[in-house]
Image (cartoon, rainbow, N blue to C red; front, side, top):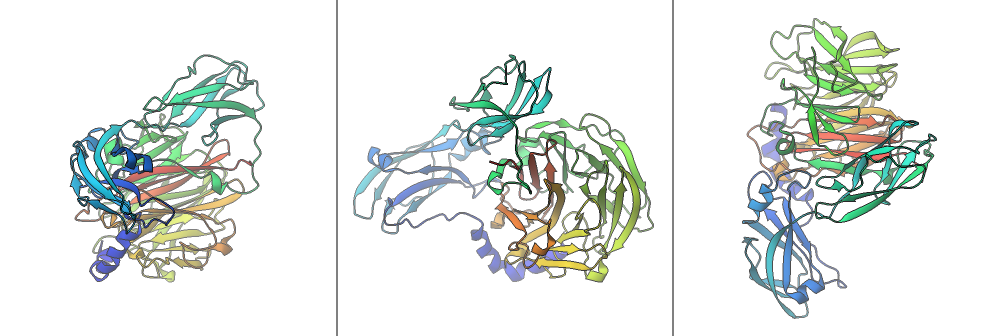
Length: 581
């Protein structure tokens, strides 16, 4: 925390500006050809969601004429959770805000209201027309429903996953096999249900209907279509990127609160997202499509300091040597299943007396060629660190191990997890060097660096955002997918209560010439998205930590990117595909 705190008081004014920049505007000036009263929103006034939007109503002319404004409060909050108490309790004390034209008015002015009761207001439009309105709220079950995944099983095709097109509600079955006698298993979005009995065998060589229903009972019909896919030549379709889930983890998964001392890492195997809190607890695994908690992984003899996964469905687990005098064996275990005990992959001893094993990164395929990095961490109040362990895997076995020192580049980092940096292999072969990120790099602020194999600097990219001092850019993953090399950077939030949002950046680094300028504005950047966060209260000590991982699907058609920001209270994932349309 020493590095971060020295910036805080000198930059309070910047923080106020930044706090407003990540939120949508509360008031939007309408254009002349639209009505002057466009929407009305209810905001939380207390708790961990204080300041977040509870509900929003898009106001129509018909509503104004009817004299009724009924705010549709979600039945669950967050929507993906099973928490119905939070929105119910919040309704009694919400802050109301409306989007109005400057020439329009509401009397009495909106303030903190009880949505369980009817409030009378008077709206006057820009032409002086008066509407007497009755405002109240009502909890509403969601009309949303989508298929997250579907698997099909048959005697002549085994089991494989369908390709889900939610936009057109088509379930593509990419195979040449006979699908004449198959059953299906369907996973749907939160609070939706499957109406079609998938246990009844059907002929999926022909188109079949799969019906699902939302929490409110609204039904949606999907159709199956057997087809042979054609991939685009490089990477994923940018237009196919969509969010799978995003929610607050402590309330739904039972992970430690944002105030807890944790050192989280995430990985993915077998279609599951695995979450390791780095606090000694057994990692849990989630459905990779919905985020639903499934259970705890089988650890066997492995000690869960950090986890990481490769491009081929393998996960590594290593212990964290975090106690003085920082001696002992670094033990790395390998597994391909959340339900089977990992096996010992490699053990390493060193004369470097620094903490290690709190952060581990993998690029490549551990069954053939891969690179693994594990940081040596700084010690609070004693020393920083500039060294890391690089493990090269050839033909599925460890071929060499080296310790590298980056002090010659002026790079160093502090203790894990907040002030530690990240050093991620740029490829599985090792010939492309590493990517580095930290809260404070050689620029003095958050940055993304490419370090070549000979330890020379390939690129130094600070941020173009003047509010970047409130970011923690120390989560990076790099993977190969469909003839492209991708690198994901998760910029964590140091101050979620000030409106500083986590942000996910994805780069195509197949050609490193695009790594020039600022990391949030360079040519290699292909995806940039702000993450909705749910923790709105400042802790006494910021625990800005988390992880990001890129996961190519086993069939090669999809790629998943999962993220976790512990302090901001957000875990989620995106998916994209490489299907030619």
